[in-house]
Image (tube, rainbow, N blue to C red; front, side, top):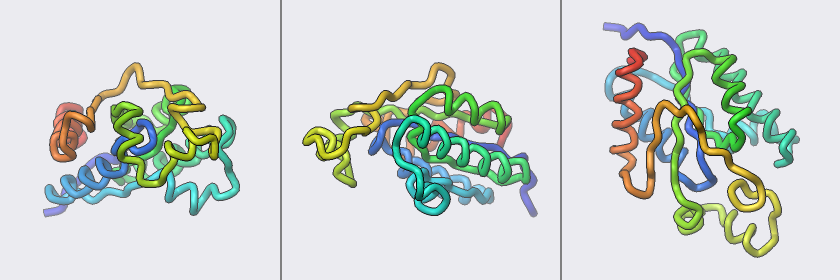
Length: 177
């Protein structure tokens, strides 16, 4: 039996190393386990493939977020479940995505800077604290937590499975799945 569903976007936002990609992969696995396929648009991978010319200025970050939002819109309007894992540091970026996508679930991947620094797989925080980079979100550049996220997960206190269950509960409540 084929599962028919409306496309929608789960937009994971949070600081670097907060657990966005880990959560995206766990959510994709959970969706697959109930017969739903999805696409993950990871900010780093999309930047490498579609936005390699962009830096990390506010304007470049905004353009990158708009590109991800547009791709998400195209996929979701064609019935695809899209999981976006993107810092998207400013509310205006996420509000734009919400507006053009429609079926949009914002998930704040909450995690303290101290914990993100401990996890830091790319050494970004170390480089920011040593002055080697000057535009790390949450250190030199602002991160604006969502005002109206449908789901807030705390990756310091909740396991990836617990975070995924919170998101799945929201998707059920909204009748997306």
